Each structure stands twice: as structure tokens, then as C-alpha cells.
Amino acid sequence: MSSQTVITIVILLLLGLLFLVAYLNSKKIPARKKEKIFEKIELLGSQINSDDDYARRDAIIKLDNVLGKALNIRYNNDSSCGDNLKLGKKLFDKKKYQQIWDAHKIRNNIVHNDENISRTQALEIFKVYKFAVKQILK
Image (cartoon, rainbow, N blue to C red; front, top):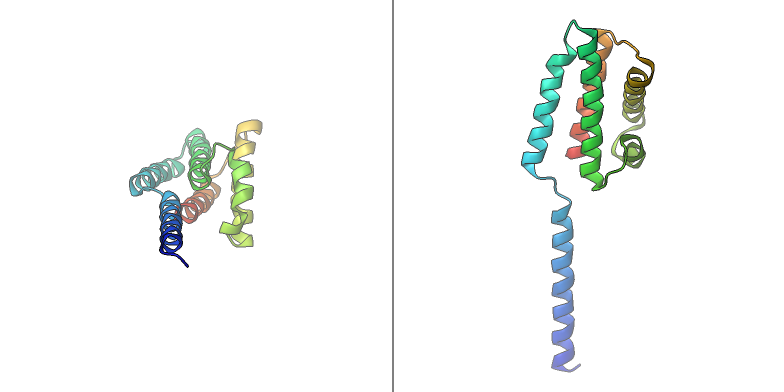
């Protein structure tokens, strides 16, 4: 093999390695972005514990929005929460995945059917959303 061929192969390998490193780094979620999302979740946690039905309902809707945003960040798209949740099935075990879907369905019932949520149920839903977002952004 000539020296030009060896140099060309080495350059191509280095370029390939450079693209691989750039691709792997592009998948990392910036720490500041994660912090903002987790801060928002904690604020919503205090709202979930409210005596006011409307505050709890609003918090669940906002938690679902946070979940959707986390999924958008994870998959680098603008798809709906439901569509991205389908993509995220492999991120969770079967039981947790079903709990997340159930929480999303409750959010839909709040929005579309004006459903009320008890404090106990709201706290359980909060735990599900918090777990899901942590799992998505890790």
C-alpha cells in the first residue's frame, strides 16, 4: 500500500471518529435545562398539595406539559406528548409505562371532561410524572 493510501485511510478514520464524538455529545441534555425542568416540577409539587381542586387540576395539566417538553428534548422533536410517549416505551418497565399513560389519560379527562382530582390521587400522579421526567432526562 502506498503512503498516500495509508494517509487517506487514517484521515477518514479520524473524521469518522470526530463525527461519532460530535453525535454522542449532541445527545447530552444541558444541565441547566434539566435544572429548570426539575425546579418547575418542584413548584408544581406544592400546587398539587393544595386544597383547591382547580390548583391541583392545573398542576396536573402543567406536569403533563413538562413531561411533553422532556420528551421533546429527549427525541429532539416537536411531536405531541402522546406520540413521544409511544416512542419512549423502551425507557420504562411495563408497569411504570402504564402508570405514565394512566396519568396522561387523567390529564386528558381533566382537560376534556372537566374531571376533578382528589389530593391523594393528585399526589400519586405527581410521583408518576416526576419519576417519568427523571427517567427521560437521565
